[in-house]
Image 1 (cartoon, rainbow, N blue to C red):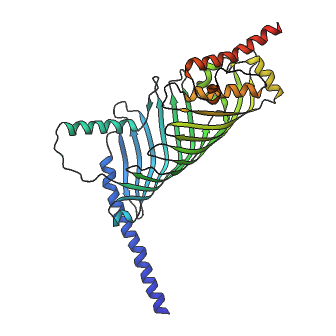
Image 2 (cartoon, rainbow, N blue to C red):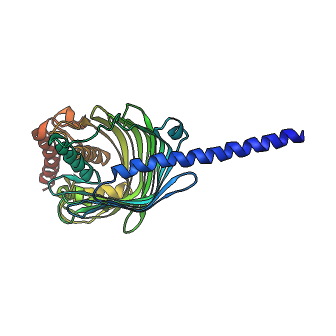
Image 3 (cartoon, helix red, strand yellow):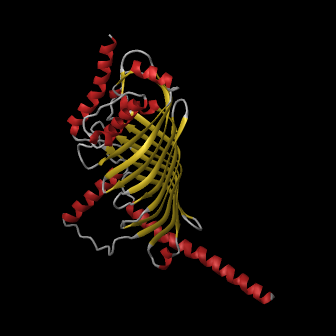
Length: 379
């Protein structure tokens, strides 16, 4: 019996020791690949081999030209699979990103700025060098890798949108946790489970965003559920300021939606709950509804309105605007919830698909015209 226990102990030592040795060498295969892809703009203060993972600390990414900061990360940990050693391929059990800060911008012309800009330029420069006839040895087969799970823990996102005007929109997410599974390269069509949670940093309170579902990293098709809780309505003021001439004093929003994207077509039914909504008395309009009408209606409803919407359309269609479609849907549902009869030109406006800008504007003008007629009758 004792001999069996001793033999089992020796076997366990060899198995555990072998695992750590193999993991150590598997990590060594990862390090050269990382150093190869590091280009201008990306700096790493420290790279260390741990017993079970590769650790990168003090990571920062800036655009080489403008020096605009896009990413700052406290630490990235890469946990290799034994297959990385046995098959000499890049296979990670997990990639963990600890306390990252991401910075995104949208220019006045509507161009999104992010970390991918430099990567794109580097690829273009590489193609030019190859075309110019520089002699390079063939690198063999393209690098293939598989990551079982990518995690972001306690991250933050700062988004500044200059396109909407002055002052620009600023959305800040804090305590962000993100997870996606089954990611490989070259990309294949796989339903990768995804989960996203974050708190919205606001002046008076803290809201939250929760997304869960799957995404196809190759086609960008997805099916997800979206939950928004206790976000201040005024956080999105830059996006509706052109359609609201009255002052919204206070209010929070909850929203639930199921978002499906298939071949660029979005299909997103949902429900919006506006709570403790107060509009300042006086002149002006709120989404084509006179403020004075809205104030009296809100008082009857206890300053809370729950409306349903259905956003649907082809995002590749230049006449389709996700923002305009959503606001149109909310306007119509908002008025109906307050008991205001609305007659909109064309069923497609009601369904959230725009039949040209002319049809949309006619529909919205018909809403405003109803209120003008009511005023004339009162006089």
